[in-house]
Image (cartoon, rainbow, N blue to C red; front, side, top):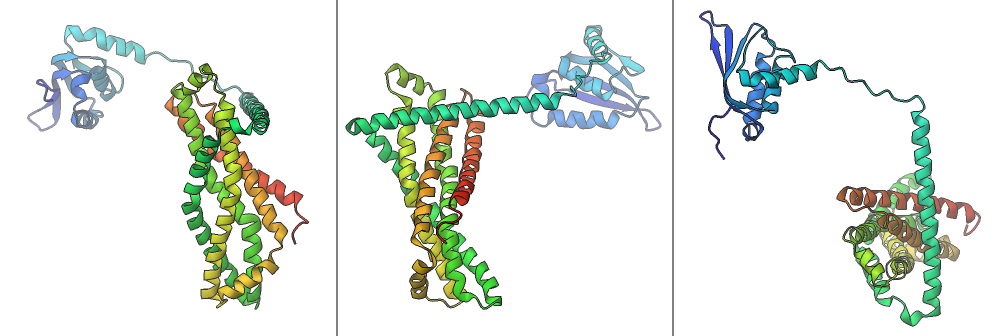
Length: 377
């Protein structure tokens, strides 16, 4: 929308060519200054005049001016009145307030030397608060599982089935693609090193053990934490923001029995299956790379694999998958139930949930490595 009397600066030159005076006119108010491109042009002109102390300024032609317009001039003058300034009497009070405010020396907040103790204490309190909430959530889950086992016919079978579909079946594509590519890369790099020492036949051993025991479960867990974990946190967060959780409590529907337990059970079922699927795709990619790089046939690869990887490693991989799935569901539900009713909390809660879930999965993997360090070799 075009507004009449737009703010204008007219520079009058002396006979010698040097700038002598600046005449301001028009409306210097925020609703006019906010027009597209206008403020940028005025700032550019005022910046070019900032260092010319000999200029005379005349603001008597200004129709109206507010604090934003006056602040533009005040900044161009270096936060003090220029020696040659002509103001309308109505503008005196406005510039007097700016002059008075510029002379105030506000006290600077001093950082306490013990600030690090305050930050450390706040971090510890937050950690123990989350730990208490997480343990409480596990206790509630145990009670709900006991109720489900006692009366399975009244259990949330539809919710469990829907969560298996969303968290398990819909993740088959991404886990297959990433698993296949990781298998190709791992097989190719291992073949490059083994060829130098004539150890080509050990490629199946290295690939089988690393994929089935470590990489497969860990890779599937990280993908599920990023994909399904964030979805669970966002779903619970939105339900809390829209007060659906409160409505469920009013109707006597338990959050734990209808929302949390189905997600934990669904991931405990679907994660081991995803681990098997990811292992198979990674081994397929590794076999294809070995065929191209070392000339190992698929038949030799499949024939050698059972001897290279003892059966107990498959069981450890499945146990890891089930544990990782339950941890991801619990962490995601924990952060989802702590979302506050604003969009900023929803974004930060989802991000924190994914990062925490991946960290917890890696910690659990380290515990598995210590407990089963002498098993399966």
